Length: 118
Length: 359
Length: 124
Image (tube, rainbow over all chains, first blue to last red; front, top):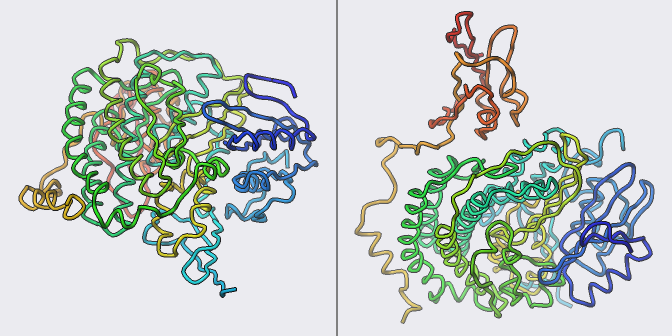
């Protein structure tokens, strides 16, 4: 884990669940999960907060790789995970309530990825 | 095991001005589970960053929501200002604070009206919205718009409020406070109102954290978190207490919002008395490069803004996590075990804003 | 006792006071001076630079330099006022008075004549 900016930490995929379980046990709440596509890789940022403190954990995921769902630990992650799969095409595995790309009723596939990145 | 049935709720329903669909799993009249389904009005505003330059995006973000439009613009502007290391003038920060608090009064009054309408007290609904009208008129005098203000820009604000206008506004708010006391007393005392709200839709403190609830929803469950206390804009100079309630039910949510109405009026009074006389904007040169996140307290709760820029005219990624998006999982928790007849009311107690949610 | 008839006082007051609504359209609506109603152009000072066209978020303005014309689709305009802010000659202004509804969209074109005055106005 390395701090790349104040309160933003870069983590590896193996560190994801230890971090999330630690947050859960310390009663942190999930603020949001943000996906963005930067230079051929997905960047998934998990933000947790307790009181006025906030920590962001960033995972870099290759275009063909996938991330495990955290929706079994944090139930509120369902919407965020479905959203990033539908809008960015990031493969999130085993979401608890899977909308199968029908969370937003749109026709286009992965509309938030630029045409050349698809 | 009793027979289970699934009842579809929405997307069109008398209590909902905006479309959201729920599949309610019922056992007789008891809701066992609720599965939300959104996406009827997805606009993809976040992806417009590829087409509109970072200055134009201010006007796009304002249109995310019709109620907290000012704060959406403010959130985006402060995120970009943070990236570009721009310190906006103090007067602009105070003006933003005043407008933000006026938006809060306007939003909470709108919500009180909708709540009254949901439990069938139409005269109270009219009374709340009548008070709200005064705020909208004040917005039109100050910014030129009743709902969309277009006064934010990167580096400050576009319009100033002269001292005379500010003192007039405070006078209007003073008069309004009296009427507000009278109207809100009905919410707090009336037997019929209480019978619909007290003890309905319990969200415990632990559930509120686990489900990531924000704003009045969270504060009504006894969690003392209000992003204004982090001191963005001019809130660092303003003295106020975070309003919480330990009761965790729908009535507590109503009480918290009513108390926040009076608190907002008090904050505006303080801000008007402390506002310094400086410039209202600073020129901003160049393009943003870097990333920043901003959290601010909207009427409905904490909003999260994330902006990543690459040094060109267009921002790389803008993300808005609106309060309703975070409150939907909490709503699902609240709906479990409630009576079918209370579902419309409980949906309203989170103060849903679907257009925010779907951006 | 407060829990019953708590709204009666308000009801009585409303019953014996004047309505809060105005008599629109019999009494005209008076807009505050800052109301963002619609965009107007002082074509005499316009230099046809096209800044407003490039900065308009919904793309409602079109400037044709070779024809000396400035046109606006009032149905696309969102009255944000960004063009007014960007205009280098301050020819644009946003004034009270909302645009009237119509059954079809139209584009208003204003031509600048060679002597600098406002030429014909046309709707297409």
